[in-house]
Amino acid sequence: MPLSDVAIRSAKPATKPLKMSDGGGLYLLLNPTGSRWWRLDYRFGGKRKTLSMGTYPDTGLKDARQRRDAARTHRVSQAIAKTMTEVDIKYPNSPLNGATAKRGPQPGDRMAPVLGDFPFGAGSQPMFTLCGVPSADLTALAKRFPNLVDPITRAPIADSTISLVRPDGYLVASSASIADIAAKLEGI
Image (tube, rainbow, N blue to C red; front, side):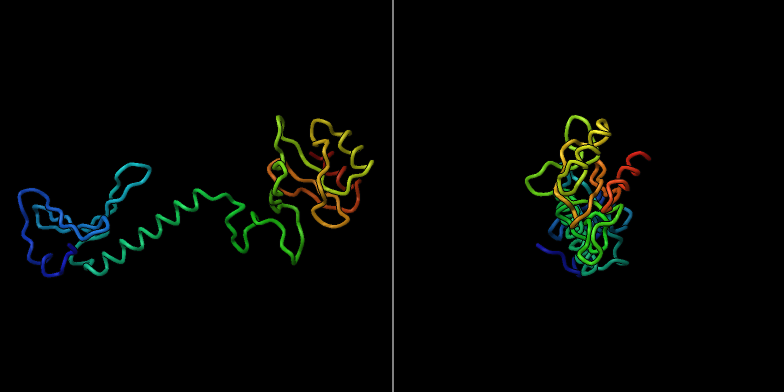
């Protein structure tokens, strides 16, 4: 049964701490000294945890219930966020989103994995990836750096450009010229 303000004010301290439950894990802990503490019990990772929500009367019953609801909402959103990948979570200005339609891919942008394709850098040895229209020049460039560049060329990220993507999926360079990409690879 939920607590009432009258029940809280009329409660007398005992020789042992007394828990006055309000529901949803919220309770008022009445100590033998007379202090009254709002507490919230919850489970995280299979273990019982307790969160202090303030003292009574500084924190009233209505305020304690609001804090309980806010804490539950916050914990649920944290749990959901931990189960989602960076591809599923979209923040408007995050570099993890990759290129935007307004400006196209820029160096430092995260290239989102393509559905049905291996992630960038996957394999027994993490390697840079060339993205562009397959050509003899791109194949020759990959052969020039066999320990650094994946021999398989991927689809272009942007029209008529060649892109170099790090093993962790971040764009290093994007250019229409193979010489510019070769210069970046030589500097690595």
